[in-house]
Image (tube, rainbow, N blue to C red):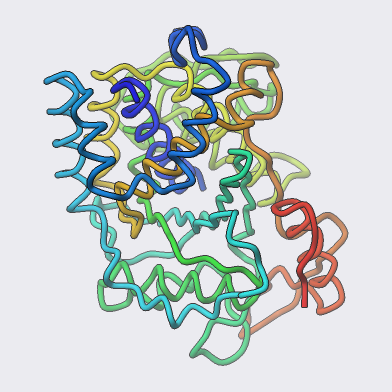
Length: 390
């Protein structure tokens, strides 16, 4: 396996997870995938991914094919991940896993924490996204759950906002415990089997997008106007002097802070948090396309160095590599080449399957038991192609 493929696999998966958690978020495809890749070689990629890439012999063999520059890159990557990975701090036996779900889909909980410092010690998780990677076909699917959804948080009475689970768990400054309670909460309320997480400080997303060179987004006139208002009329979120966006429908290039502002728009007439969730998913897909199409060694290092201080995960480097290889050899890449859907998207609550109810003086998104059955059935069919709802 070439060093180019190896580092792209790592970059793709790590950036995908960091960006998705943050999002509440050119070279041709021939430069991304080797020119003379045969069907046999594609099959080999998939075999490597399914085997997990975790044994020392395989790692050594791959390292032997790297250039000195790439070896240095991989060593630096491993060193940086040591400070980001906290895999031993989550009690996997305490997550209330749904054992009925098949294991060929890896579900990862992406948490975007609203904390204005780089430290991920507390804060509500305002982005709650289940990233599902199918190891059989390499597809990527994102399920976003509205932060105001009423859920049962283990250990607490009455219904709570979903975004409080991480805050309750991390009240002593323990990120892993916050993620553990958030995973357990999602597993219990949505019949999932999540064991892996990525927690990202959403205020680092602007820097991450800047490291990618910004992003092109299809904007409505109202969205462009809202971004201008937030960054030029209200108190700016940074000290950058920038031109206003054109107030018109169409594609515009956004810098990091403009893109973050786009993903956080919530005050357009006739819209709500569900529309905000949809914008976040669109932003994530646009960013993923950039990563998949254009990631040289310099951009890779810059991106990782920028992103890692804002994130924590219990995914190991081997797991990231395995998942990245799976995506590289799967349907997401094929769809990128053909202009199809790169990332499947699903949102909870579903249209006409929720209401509002007051709990402890707060109006929360409420999904009745009957509607929850409908929702869970649709979600599992989206992720797995069939339902395993109890």
